[in-house]
Length: 481
Image (tube, rainbow, N blue to C red; front, side, top):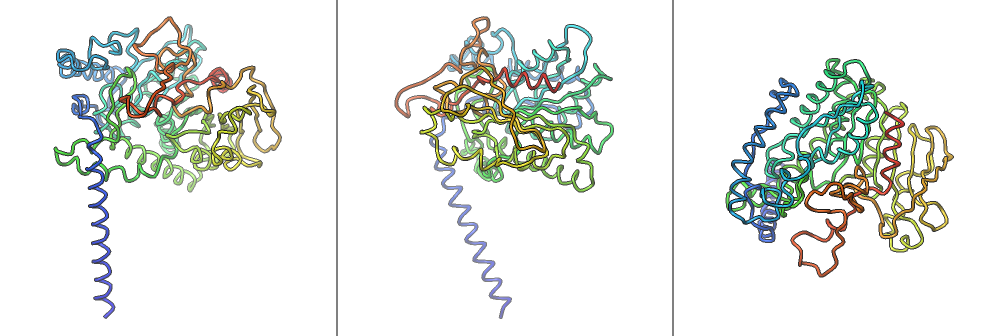
């Protein structure tokens, strides 16, 4: 009697699950009407080198493949879009102010920067998801001036068209990381090697270093610098692939996208495909699995020290994951976590949500830790003067260093995207330099008006895009490298 009952229960459970899936897919399909029509750059998927090809290639071969990729985009996308006249303010029209080919430099491409004299070391810089090498140009330029050769690869699927991220996968990004490190070691074989990773690039830097613990053919960096590292993402990313299922039918092609937006940023995609979200989940899961394996066989003790910079408020990656799934797992090897706190000045603190106001104390209560912890925030007393409070590993008392800068009164927090950009960045800076202009100054936009008027959401325009404490970030990188 029990077996038939169990079969009935399983059958009904399956029916309920299928109904839930059908309902969710129906809701997803119904919501597609709110997305704009797909443009050519949402449909053209350029062919990137696969993992085996990347592992067999050298830097020059990768640059050649990259050049061929951009040539194809020019003939198959840029020229037709420009001729149609339908995208007057798009990065994909050559007569547009934000067309990368018309700007002082096209930072969408891989590049290296030579130091003024003999290299005292080499650094590989890995950009983030939907991003391009532009996001690490300032740090790369500064470190090259300080005597390091800088190698900055464009990750496959990036710098071209958003549709490229519907096919790119994290294994390609990791292979591109290996390729860039090979080039770094070819040019500077004996001096120190460093890895800097921003956002998704932070996860790649970690995964590469964990792999180097067990593969002697991979050069081990002496230090990792992670900026807004993608250690954990939202739970939605785990199931993101389901949201794209309707895209199997051409009529529902828009379901492959989470956002479909105008592409007015010359060096970063605004549109975001579902597949990319799934890749972030797979990469972060892979990093944790590699941590588990290294910890189990005792290799984790050889992981190089990590210096990480993280905004307490970050809607892209999980700040708790950076603390719990990275720093609480690291060996006592001289690592440090720098947290940029929210604005706790008297003028701003009354507007803070209770959960955000108490997040720092919840995540990092007073305790002795195996790593240094630095909190950059306003000094006690209700003013806006900013200080760095550093607690050395194994201690409880903080050493306080005034930074001689105020927390901007109009700013309630930094953001995921702000950290690697100084305030004079011509694209993202709040006070852009007049020496360069990249078609739009996104960091100066302060829109006011009614909801539903703009083609982009107000939340994206209100997000802080540069770091008023960038000088401190650069100073701390200099100390380590």
